[in-house]
Length: 287
Image 1 (tube, rainbow, N blue to C red):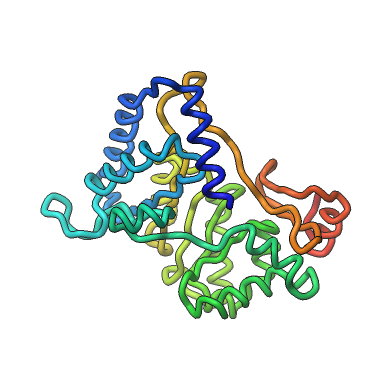
Image 2: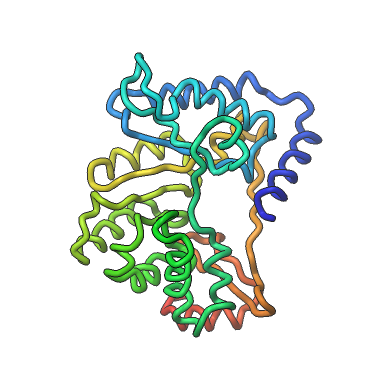
């Protein structure tokens, strides 16, 4: 329910607080981002739309996607920009269908949280989540999520088997440069060539930050970037336009508390302090 509920909340909020949206400014900003992405040396940089949850409105979201399809291309060979396009797809399945885009996504935090309540003993819940995912999708959807217990706990469980089994991992909290370097080192330490693996960055990305990450890691691994709010809800500077910072996360499953322990302050979520303390102890996570 998270995606439709958050999209509705945003639609209603901005409809009532911004009677005359500054779409000309939004279009100017979108154009500037596209120009940045089309700079020399960035031909292989591909972005995806992850912006449904916090978009300004459905109509604006669709306009943004249509402009990105036209200006950046979606994999077709264009005379003015040889090779595949820079717009890889969208996490919005409806627009993927209606606009002929590739639907993209990874496992969600809620999935790994649910495994805390539905799997075997708590210490094995992350491994259980990875194994059940692979069993279900049989090699498809091969990107793991690394920040439900923090990067250190993720790497402890992400052994040679998982390094080989999955296509890569997604960053969603903490310093992305540090995360990327740690993951590449982890692959090398397990005798896996990082150039065969995909790192997906999706944590509050802007186009300049996306370009910085691309320049740091390009050629060292496969790369993908999911840009959300900065694509679908950027119509001006505060205080005139401030996107909502709202999320919906699971706190209980099957009558039991569940939690997310993030590498970024404020991104964790749990309503049971005793369970949170126990989870930290089990996964060796400092407070």
